[in-house]
Structure formats: structure tokens, C-alpha cells
Length: 108
Image 1 (tube, rainbow, N blue to C red):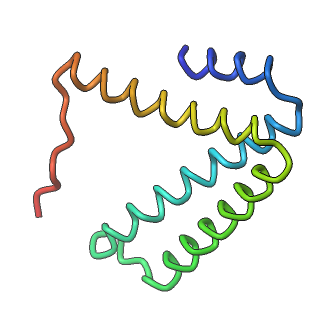
Image 2: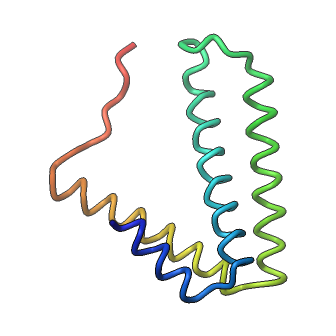
């Protein structure tokens, strides 16, 4: 429901181009997080380090290009992305405090 609320809010403030860019940026952030996590789990997954590093590097490069493009063409989209990220982290923090959930280290 929170995500739907953000989508409705963004749809009211942005053009279709802005929504597309916001979605692309969000997906790139997810790819960076997944690739970073995969690097930490290399021993468990047996993946080749260079493939994960290449994927992480390309995601970071495309993220940088997209942020630069948005900075030049639509600062509103970039501001909404930052507000959305901030809200996501605040909601996650509040949820963890409310239910007492914490992140546990993996047992090795």
C-alpha cells in the first residue's frame, strides 16, 4: 500500500518521461544492492568474481549517467527520487523499531 501511494503521488507530479526515469533509477539501485550482496556471498554462490564486479560497475555507471541526465533535464524527478529513498529508509527504520526486528549476521 505504501508503494502504491508513492506511485500515485509520483504520477500526479511527473510526466511519463519522469516516471520512466524514476523507475529506471529505482531498478538500478536494486541491481547495485543485489550485486553488492552477491559479492559478499561469493563463497556460498560459487560465482565468478569478475562477472559480479562487471555487473556492479556497469550498474553504477548507468546509475551515474541517469542521475546526471536527470540533473540536467529534470531536477524535480531527481528531488522526488531522493525524497522517496529517504522515506523508504525512514519507514524501514520505524518498522524495525516498532516490531523490534534487527538484522542478524550470517552464521559462518
